[in-house]
Length: 225
Image 1 (cartoon, rainbow, N blue to C red):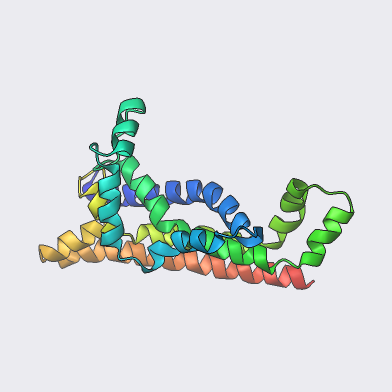
Image 2 (tube, one colour):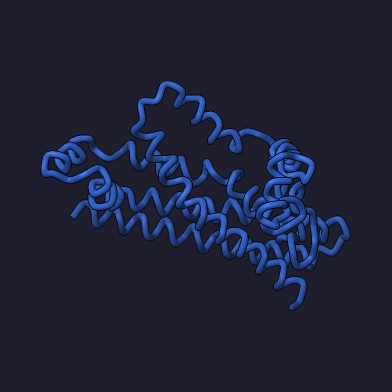
């Protein structure tokens, strides 16, 4: 496969897998943050939000230390699962999940918080369990928030640079993603190739955002009917 298409394939594969796994991780985390009265909840919220304000290279550096074969986690994963977490695609996925966590959790948490308590209490009054209320009452009312979380996570992962560079490096066909390729092409003064990568990412990102705004608008119209 041509290196250009191979790099784009790795980029979108990483974004898709990160978004897929983060949905199942972020949904329960968002639910807990929205409805729990846990005293240390602000600490958990701060931890989840760290990637929003922490420089990517700082996060990448500490993840590099944690994922290293010399660390407990790195050696455990390599010994018992046969996986290397640094300079590997699997490590990129794990790092991207951590780095993009707030982009999935925050929109869904806001959606949970926006559901009127009266609707939830009415479901309980009708004999619905918490699980039934979640799937039949709450989630259908926060479709737009879920879609926003999915799209933001996908778009954010496509544009990652610092974390993926620290954890994955730039191994063609393995860990080299489009954001790193753009940087390397600009360094080599190969602006034409850099433009090809940048233009594809621009088009995809714009199209994804256009879809989410259009769908969310339709959701709002349907809710008003």
